[in-house]
Image (tube, rainbow, N blue to C red; front, side):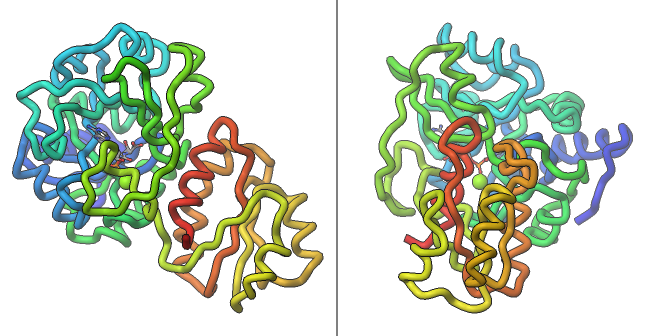
Length: 334
Ligand code: TXA
Ligand code: MG
């Protein structure tokens, strides 16, 4: 594995590597992606292998121009065009009918394809220079926490990736919002970095399906939506806002342990009980964007670490709070 900078000559090397069938981890505004040429079946197969990802879980294809949607999608409904015009580039992935030219391995045999135009200038430049759409899941082993720095990718994937382009920490910090645009009404498959409110402002109400417990290995309509996902290896217990420490006390608190809460004010209230060995704040300035950007780094840090358990409180369920609560829930013991 070789680390590349964001200098133009390094981005050109990354692009060439993609064209040659190599795997390149690239920074996006959400999380780092493990990229391969979407039209190269062997390279895409290596992505699944590197992540130990089950082949029934399809990948997102990344493009660097709205027009390129036509390279991978068979048809684009008017509402999807509106979303693309309003919110791309950005942390929004749309599910559309798949073009037959897209290899089945990318879409896990589904008749649909996931497409995203990322905003990060480094991702965009690499895709442009490669001249091919880039299939890229998050650059982590399957089921583990997504990477928001190049160091996370290097630690987790090591020599299973050919190049890692170091673009610094990701601004958004949680994965893209995934919307299925193939049915009569748009359906939210994964809350993410694009607020649902922003999407509904463009296309009106979006269907939010109830969370149903299904397990890996099952045939899933939205395959990545398994409930245990994004999980750290330190057990994480999730509680309602404002319910720590009482709710945790009743189940018995492991030592050493850490509480993970939204704001500094909340941290002070919890510290006063002296029940946890540490209290970590998701948003020092108390805003959900900051909480999203810091979430995975904090979980990676906890895991490197000294704690036997993590006791987390939910954040407000609005804007990026939906994605944060979703990832906390998936990371939690159920
Ligand atoms: O922000 C992101 O989306 C990042 C960056 C790298 O772009 N990528 C990412 O990829 O999170 P991944 O593979 O970790 O998550 C892709 C999600 C999965 O839940 C997958 O099941 C879903 O998108 N997906 C992909 N294709 C689909 C399809 N045709 N139908 C339904 N869900 C699909
Ligand atoms: Mg992922």
